[in-house]
Image 1 (cartoon, rainbow over the protein chains, first blue to last red):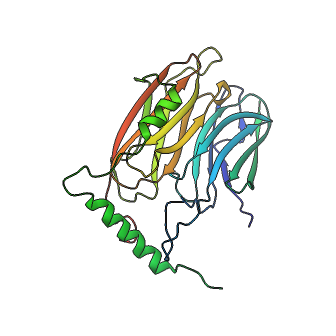
Image 2 (cartoon, rainbow over the protein chains, first blue to last red; image 1 turned 135 degrees about the vertical axis):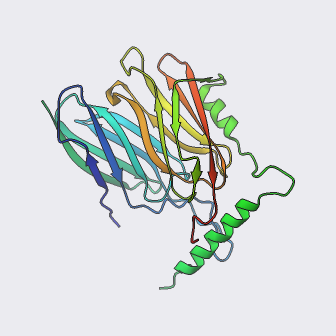
Image 3 (cartoon, each protein chain N blue to C red; image 1 turned 135 degrees about the horizontal axis):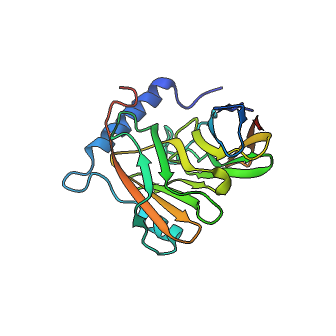
Amino acid sequence: MSVKPRIKLDKKEAKKGDLVEVKALVSHIMESGQRKDRDGKTIPRKILNKFTCTVNGKEVFSADFEPAISANPYIQFRFRAQESGPVVLTWIDDDGSKIVGEESIKVN
Amino acid sequence: MKRSFDRRQVLMLGAGAAAIAALGIPGGPAYAKNDYEEVIAKFTGGKTPTPSKVKLDLPEIAENGNTVPMTVSVESPMTPQSHVTDVLVVTDGNPRAGVATFHFSPASGIAEANTRIRLATSQNIIAVAKMNDGSFFTASKAVKVTIGGCGG
């Protein structure tokens, strides 16, 4: 099942040195591995454990997530605009699969 | 195709869990401590972080422990000479201490992140920031989680 993350940058164009805000929301169950099903068996953990944002190929922000992150994880952060290019957001699932979203930024 | 849970059962389970969490252990603390101190010690390499520079923004009372907005920020010029490299967030009342670790660099421009977290019960949230010079700063915030958040 492929999911499309929702990504919003607060500006499409920025002056060099400006801070650009990124808000991103992705659909995911973020099963904590703590819950039990009806038969008392633990439901296996399945979360997005790693998030990375690169701008023009350079990492500007990343995060490691634990099961205490809510379902449909939301992340908001800022980066300093340096050069124009793609803004790529990547989430990595426990099973190794990836969710990738892309925006772009123009730096004047 | 048989699903093991329908919506009603999930809601009831959630309400039950919240009620149990709210009752706590009679005569004892409201919750058992997890290993958050060890997690912090591992992050700092045994150093004691200074309570300064870090700001944790969470609601004082969370109606729904399943999704509590949290903002963590650290005062820093974020220059190559002086910047925040990592911020660890842990809780002392969840079954597992870890919440998230944020990684910053001078390219981040500002050491600030916002996400939504799960809180099993009323507890303290602790953030520890690691600076590029090897110093550590911390802040904590108590959040009350009320019942009725799930299904109520």
